[in-house]
Image (cartoon, rainbow, N blue to C red; front, side, top):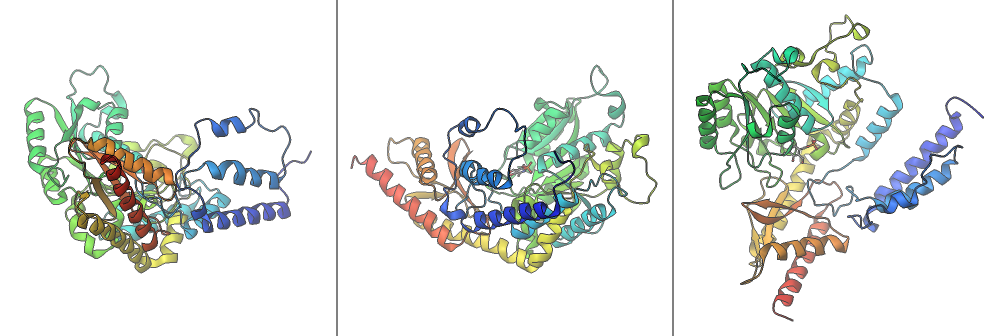
Length: 480
Ligand code: PLP
């Protein structure tokens, strides 16, 4: 029985074989069906119930990755992945993950890994500059936008009533109900934050959106006024720049104005579309976000950085430190630097900045812009096909790289069932994976482009599939 780490040769073999597997997996990804067709419990039945008592040979383990695991994944790296928001674990990002795992540092304090803290500060600032936000915003990296939104609302609550951190909210009749506002299109992470923070789902006002699925400022004003009259305390507005269903952008400048007048915290959820602000032509849509207190942008969504990497930009970082900093003796340190543990709940922090840095350096700002523009071009291309074909109903010009449409139903035909059948048939074929949403109560099909492997050829392929299925489903309707 040996103890300690694997010998160097063994380690090299392990990493080289794993790298070979990664390169083969990614370069041959199109040979696999994009959406996994496995049955629930299938892998569980194949895995032993007990952990191995004795170490196993590397080749057997890697062979199990190939035989057992890879066939039971949905392949987010597949160029036909057009569901939810398409993402890419790009090569520089994968290398960054490997190096972060190898260094295995914990960036909780500056002193526990100075370079990890300072690189995080720097890459967040690179992103801030690229998306055109002014000096003064300071960023740090969380795992997800959901956590960023939770933290922003916790900081907003702390700013509104500094006693809650110490005394809590329960049993305090003198506290008003705190209210938060977001459009009916905002992501469910806002509801989760209200739930976790004890604000309560009933105190999250889902404000109506307009015909282009953007928050209605008038409805926002009415909701705030009515809460004030009822003695409730409006806390924050979560505006969305790139909604999950249609990627619509709320009127940020007008929302910021409302927040300023009522002294509300403005959090901008730009998890997906905020990345597009690196392209100057998209910038006008974001006008006004510079007045936000906090903005979240996910490089893991549309900046080719592997999951997870979510940048939170803060206009006044001290407000976060005020809300979250608790330093026990065993974590005390005297250096003049930010300690990332003071900006949230978690103590342990992965070295996520490394992969983002590698992605930004490898592609350069110019290369990143070109890739985002290509995704938007692909979206416009399929959108124009759909628009020209009267069997389809294109909901709106795609604001970025996401296209929403539906197949028109024949007379007496159930539109929802028809479109569900369309989505199921596309997904069952294995070449593309598309998803759906509901807008104004109606079922809508979504296609998104965010994968570096997706090209015009894949757009043509999905169009051929939709075209063929539309004909086939219409044929069934006619009883042919
Ligand atoms: N906000 C928006 C607008 C989203 O579309 C999503 C996910 O798609 C999220 C937040 C949640 O992101 P995360 O998975 O990083 O929590």
